[in-house]
Amino acid sequence: MLCCEREVWLRAFLTCAIGACSMLGDLGLKYGKSAPERAVFDNATHATVGGLTWTLIVVLSRKPIMRSLNAIFSCFLLASFIDLDHFIAAHSWHIHDATHLDKRPFLHCTTVPIVLWILFILLSSIFHSPEFQQASWIMLAAFLSHHIRDGTRRGLWFCPFGSTRPIPYYLYVSLSMSLPYLLYWLLSLHTFTEKSDSNVSLIDV
Ligand SMILES: [Zn+2]
Image (tube, rainbow, N blue to C red):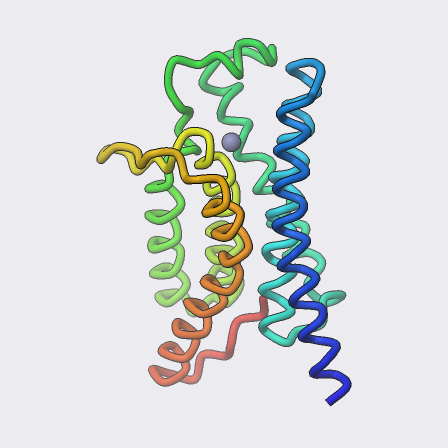
């Protein structure tokens, strides 16, 4: 009972932390003095929201956080590295070039993680690899948390179909806070189907 109560508080704390961290990051972006300062603050926020998203998925899965630190850190790093595509598209390491592109860089297209996720899931089923499957969910969580956050400024981009309008501010914060619950629900649906198909063990989040 005590354990259950602790879990509920931890979930509530992590959910609020995602919302608070996103809003704090937006304030830093608004009031940052220079372009590099704003970029660093924005990227740190993406990384933290990504890490918190996977931590909440671990808590929802009732797995010990200490055993999932690698996965949490992977989600943290990947959510940050997505912005490297600005520099790749600009062919430059200068922050001014990277933030003044004509169009959005390729890793900011939401079709990319969706296609990759489907591909990884298929490959993990073919090769019966729980590690591959775990990587597919971490990748999806990192990308979606990053894209939702960017989406409040520029909308979600589903190339080659086009972009949505910018996500209204409070909808973006709510979506960021709900994302771990949505992914956990999809993950449990998927592992349930896998389990009834064969004796594949539940993935280690
Ligand atoms: Zn970005």
